[in-house]
Amino acid sequence: MLTRPTVVNLRNRERCSMILAEAQRRYPIQESETGCWIWTGKRQRDGYGLVMHGHAFLSAHRVVYEDAIGGYLKASLQLDHTCRNRLCVNPAHLEPVTQRVNTLRSEGPSAINARKQRCKRDHPFDDANTRIRKDGRRVCKACCRQREAQARLKKRTLKRQSAGGTGDT
Image 1 (spheres, rainbow, N blue to C red):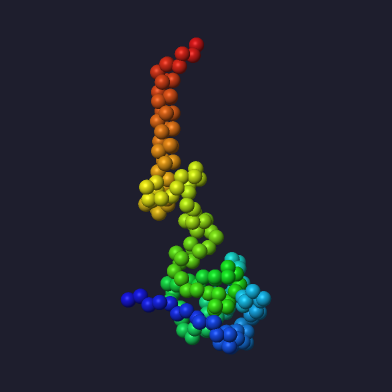
Image 2 (image 1 turned 60 degrees about the vertical axis):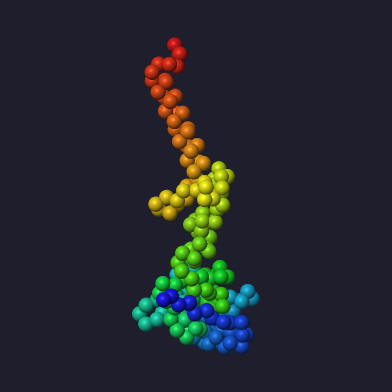
């Protein structure tokens, strides 16, 4: 049976202040005017904060979040930065989600293409006009029909030219 991930209720300002004070005591964090808790310690190349735990580096936002909820997050879940700031470790700005949800909420190519409602030739991506390939990509049926018609026309034209039916002298 699946269980819901733990969600941190930080609507209580007193609890939020306590968690921030504890986090600032233990980790290099500064509060910003946007409400983000900015990690000022070591960073990964991709912009996320790092914290040393024993002999391993861990994601700072995950460590602070797990400290705030008083437990561990399932390994199958990722923390989505709802504020879109990779250095933010504020548990109220982090939401446990699956990798798919996290990817689709992002601004990467997969997410951008998944949000598209129309193909590049402005045909709709709907049930009647969309085929899903084995690799999961969407294909516009109208565009496929146009490409196939152009290929047939080109083939006929080449066949006529090779048969000598062009009339050129």
